Length: 142
Image: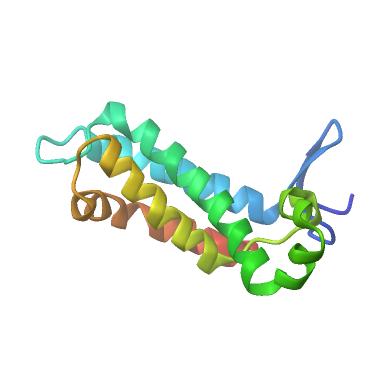
């Protein structure tokens, strides 16, 4: 098995669906963030309640994927994308950029805060302790 993206080592392969190490790292980081965020959301002084944590993790996941892909395409494959605009959507060929994912998550957190009427600073303060494990898993995935 070749991997989640072209040349990426496979982390898990079941029934023809392969999840590479980077995908597993992202899932692990989001899972940890969901678990820790759920506990933090139960605190009385939390700007985000337990029920909103599910939305927060979903927004973050979309920000990671969309931002990471856009970042890769814009920073590393702009010429290829201009020649073939549909290449943006061929994610199975690989290509995610950390800095694009970071920008995507920042945008997603801003949208989440806006939707739930929470100041961006409050969202960022809530999320800050949730991120280190995901970042560490990403480094291990490399």
